[in-house]
Image (cartoon, rainbow, N blue to C red; front, side, top):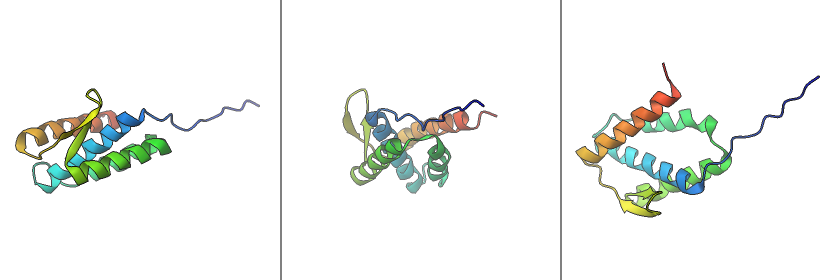
Length: 108
């Protein structure tokens, strides 16, 4: 008999998860401003959930809360929070990233 250990998902760096959460907050703001289709952000977050470690979830939720509260995005490369305005240009970019995430989750 062979036993195969299944380990939980490895946590991503917390800064990356915080950034992802702040991105989801930006997407939510775009939905609220009617700049992108409503409901897709929450659906994507639910679809990603099985792939996340508990630490990832905590960091994403933290980034999401701060991003919504302060209307900011955490930029990993700059190691700082930047302002976000849900206008046509920024929401167009946000939609592109959402579409990319969806394509990776459902590559049909």
